Image (cartoon, rainbow, N blue to C red; front, top):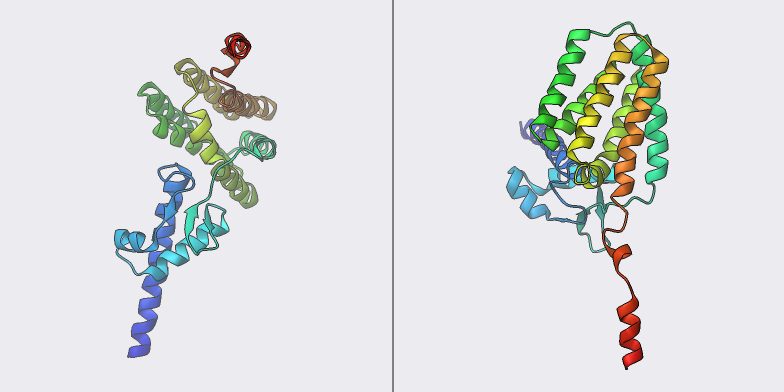
Length: 243
């Protein structure tokens, strides 16, 4: 009886760890928990009403995805975010996204009503200026296109690519995309969907490439100096000469 009770406790613990993992993963990807934030196991255990064991297991899973980092003092933090490998990421995202678009166009599995309804949800979110919902709706369309391929490897790797870039889009695309650019994104997604519905692999390929390159340009713009280039140094020089 005691052995059975221990087994049930371990089973509940595993379920608890996965639930904690799912919640924390979403909060990290959507930057509801900022990069570099310390993750206190006691506070997390109290929040999720579990022991610290499932918390540690969840953090280990997140560390395996490079979303959490363990420090030498045994503190865990949300992994810092940088754009050091942004070029490599965008190359990979572009290659896999183009494969997704082409495979969706050639799949013969497209349901026009379902796909257009997903696009309309994106349009409504953009019109409502709900950036999080609009990004979720756009990604939902893209994941749906990947699913049309029926290729388990393409679906898996595309999911991973989307998640790997999530914090970049949230931190660098969302705050810097203008209203006009968001509306232009609607037109580009609609063009992709229409190309897929037409079964035109070449047009689908070009459409998703335009989408990614346009978004990448906004990310790149977010790194430009905002005011430093407009600061003349003449007065600084005059001050030195006056000393």
